[in-house]
Amino acid sequence: MPRMTGLPFARPWRPAGRLVPGRLPAANVVPWAPWLPALLALLLLALPGGARAFGFDDVAREAAALAGRPHAVPPVDARLAALTYDEYRAVRFRPEQALWRDAGLPFQVQFFPLGRGNVRPLRLHEIVPGPQGAQVRPLAVPAEAFRNDGPAPGLPVAGAAGWRAHFPLNDPARHDEVVVFLGASYFRAVGAGLAWGLSARGLAIDSVGAAGGAGEEFPAFTAFWLERPAPGARALRFFALLDSPRATGAYEFVVRPGATTTVDVRARIHLRAPVVMLGIAPLTSMFLAGETQPAADDYRPEVHDSDGLQVALGESSGGEWLWRPLTNPAGVFVTSFATAGTPRGFGLMQRDRAFASYEDLETRYDRRPSAWVEPLSDWGPGRIQLLQFHTPDETHDNIGAWWVPDRLPAPGGPPLEVAWRVHFGGEGLAQPPGAWVAQSRRGHGWRHETQRGEREHHQLQVDFVGPALAGLPPETADGVEAVVSGNDNVRGLKAVAQRNAVAGGWRVTVDFHRIDPARAVELRAYLRLGERTLSETWAYALPPGR
Image 1 (cartoon, rainbow, N blue to C red):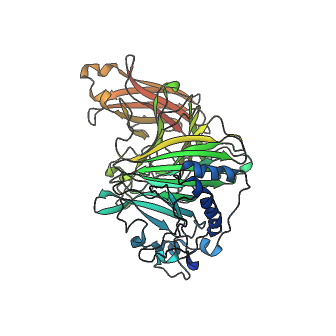
Image 2 (tube, one colour):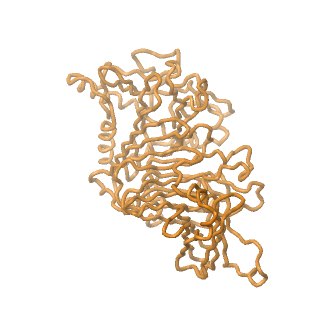
Image 3 (spheres, rainbow, N blue to C red):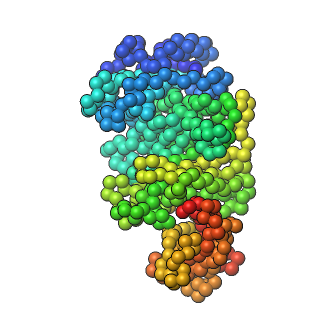
């Protein structure tokens, strides 16, 4: 456990106006109260040597010690787990009880109640900086910090399943939600003017390739240390402990709200047992229908939180920019891009921001954020992996993207240490240089009657836009060509590029026959003028059976 310095006793957080000095009331003892004697002993040992700051290494020592012990499965409160959706949603945190609200600080923290799929209480702490070092205080979230607007008796209960930070993101007079941690190692953030959308995670384990049908393992953040921000602070720093049957980890986060909100992540990951794959900097999203796959019997032209995977390879891999449109496959569909070294970045993007593309007044898919992952350390060789599987509706996330290292840490051996930054933003986020894909539409226009029965004859219209195309003089139009290639499941592949005189940019028509419908098709296309590459590479993958 972390050392405590400063005052001889750390008081728990209590609702405004009801702080009880010098003791923990029995009715509000936090679930981890048995650890407090050990914490106090560490404090007493630390005092003779002088106070010091609490930081990442303190959490890392706990993660390393935890990795040397068997994974402990906490007991589940069956009553809380059995709550219906409406019963759980009826329990709400009281905003006036927010942490740091009375102090007038730029960040405030609210908590999520226990219940339904989130029944494991978090260990929560506040780090209070001071001239003699940091004071670490356990935070107790009492039952009276919540209200119950529903019929379920016995609610709320003490403890928290997650938390969210608020900041004056859109209006200086109002604190808006800016980042949320709830469920396993999931977190979400939002930039100014945007709505909630896709999620990030601390770690993914065996999301793909698990032997024997073991399935995916979901590590969970089980403890947080929230650093009290200074007046006027523009960033929030905190630490987290991750635990799962086969992994533990120490994490440091720094959140900077803005038009694009960034989340810096530093992680030190230990393995308890072998894994097939580790997903670093995981992103999770939803794609139901879009330009290449319209929905039947839906008034909305498109329904998705993200419309493509964007990749920027590092110089060791050629420095190429790639765009892979997302799909809703019939089953599970996994593709990847190999990286000889650290990529410049990757992300699940929502490029299409026209309301007319969605026509949904409630969900506002046109305002969903993109998430771009920028490595902050040397990741080494690996691959950026995209997992897509079928979803029957928009309530299920069916898209995952992450970086998979070629070399995994050995169980019980030195940990894997990585760092990255996640940018949550809107239009123009991490835009490729030159030109990029604005839309990909699958389907035929008019066809000759001899072609209408050919089920495996496919056609796509791909629009490229960007300054590299807008700046071309008209006389160069005939010199712009589409360079196209496909895998061995394609025959008769051809592409035609023409200037788009209506919307600007260039349109590429890709035409091909699929040889075996039970196998995937992979296509690549980009625009070139002489020896000059004008655009990113459109890297389309057509799943089997689609």
